[in-house]
Length: 54
Image 1 (spheres, rainbow, N blue to C red):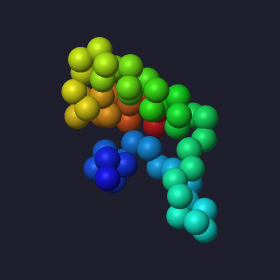
Image 2: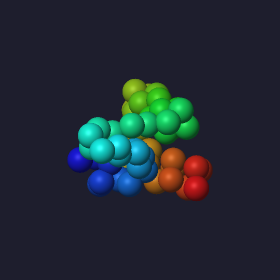
Image 3: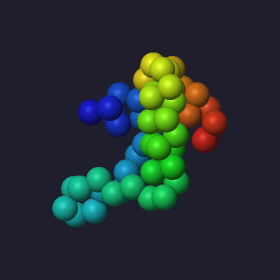
Image 4: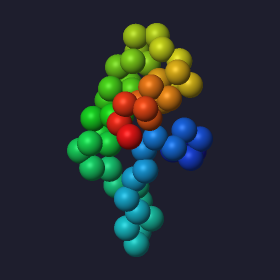
């Protein structure tokens, strides 16, 4: 659900329709978790990430 809402992470979807993430996406996710744990709101984290990684 959050993948569609923030459109930051776009996983690969094989025939099994499971989400697959590459290393770069996992690094972004870990950075997002760190910022969230430091008190940043999710809505503030993802616009920062989106600008930084595009």
